[in-house]
Image (tube, rainbow, N blue to C red; front, side, top):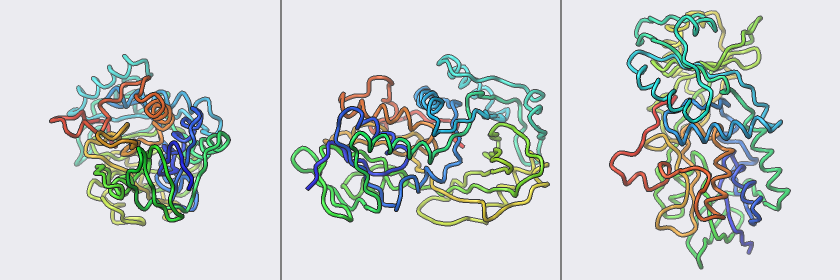
Length: 378
């Protein structure tokens, strides 16, 4: 029976980054992936955005440090197209407080008035059925990356350092044994001193199979794609905070979406009934969207892995020896993965994260009366 120092469940971008950094610290690492290949879950179906415009300091720094790493990684193909948030009056004061925090942490974010924001493209600040837009914020270092390329590069590095990756291998059950875990997989038994749960939308189920309650559930998200346009325009990834509608350029096309908070659970396939509610608010704010044609074959869906407060769960499971969580990113896994990999190596090897305070993201927060809530959720 093979025994590992760390057995990681999930070969998405979080599991891959963690595998690399743990192997870099000299540990024997195994990675379990139920799919035929890595990056076939949320990672491969991500809209690929990276941003620092959050309202909680830990989230800001997780993304900012990760962006710095992606900048230096050719496989990431980092493109700083920027993020533009259109902010309604009801959220303006709180949003500016978030900008003040972002700037105090040294990340580049600008406040823009309506006239400056409309230099990117036309939109209606006063749109029927939507809150009026008072202003905007722009993050020039925000942008997009290649999640698949990043994930594969981390796994390549991890393998070079001796990590072993098992695809088409399902995590079936686990039980404590001798200060570690006996893990039953679809290919047989494995032993590990420590299990790291990086199973994305399946993280709650992985916990259940080990007898643990981990509050992560899947939420289906749609990414709609237009047909090619003759003269594509360059502009930032844009989010209308009054409705949650977002869009960005994708080569000579436009992709767009809007989260459906009721779409929870492992439902598969495109939900075409959600197209009309998405376009209704999108066209109200951006009437020029009516000129585009939808490409149904190019559109896709994927899972968010959501927690009750839309923050990830990071670190050791309280009262459970040898179990670490890195899951529940609620749509922010790609943009925070690089730093999370480093932090998980610290949590495992140094017994506690050293380089960033993640106490607000630890499992113990769910026992507090009022855990911090990230407000800039899309």
